[in-house]
Image (cartoon, rainbow, N blue to C red; front, top):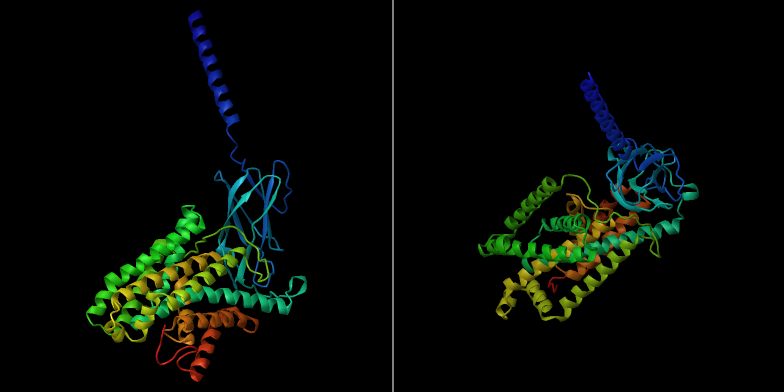
Length: 442
């Protein structure tokens, strides 16, 4: 009897120890509902709490309500809410670090589309961190008036600035397309996919691998330039030697363009991939973002270097000679195939740079980014004088400015059509384009 009592005592003691241990583990483990993120209708920052808040607005700066906003903490915890009537959303966080903010695209009302779908912001305790989303288009009943209305002169200046930016980015790609046409006579419809490739490579290097944007851009230019070398080495060079006509070659470029588009869709899907996720506000004399200022500066410098190289260097003079008369250039001792290959390398590298800068200032890149710009690029090249590099620059600036300023009078969805209207009008008056002539010199 005494032995049985002793066994029961030991069993009870062991049970108490096990239960106490389990209670201790439960006390030490965080509760299932103890999340570092809490959504609400307001937030007050203090020593233990940081605020992540913002608004969702349309192109008329009117609030967009009932849009789903999701936030992911560094620890992986998530929370979501919907924007209030005034378009605002608030999250209180108790853990400092980098938070991912996602816009629920499926919850957007008709008439608006996202510029960015994801932001990554660094939240510090006791601080308020903005994380808003500005949308393209506008919701039903949205009117740009009242305290948020922009004066007409300021709106005109903003559209001109945005058009100048677009024109410079188009010029980077258009000059390459014009050089290819000038030296080979080929209208390369696959040129736009170099823009898309540049944007996706920038996303991989900068957003995924965390490389500095300057380093990422240099790598993108090198890889897209390599793709141009491989294209001419493996496709266009052999086809030229086989004597294929320009029509057949143009059909090949169309097929290559379609194939690359669907390869991009297969790999990346249909979503938009942001290259830079930091939220930037318009500032400065042009009322554009800091990234846009850098994009304009880089574009101007690169375009100036290309222009100087075409004008003053031996290779530039050889390129212009090949564009002017290939047979005469070959008879004078110029290695025409070498010049054409270098033109392909430079042109695709410029298109890759254009893709990086376009994705950087326009919210990201997706599989049809280049395809959407292709007609504008061809319009710019034709308007300036097809086959002339400097004409492509002039045409790009005109198309970019006209397309953006047209939104002062017509819906934004039709803005690119105005560039084509200008193209038709100019060609009716001057069929060779603004700087085009019978004897092209580059």
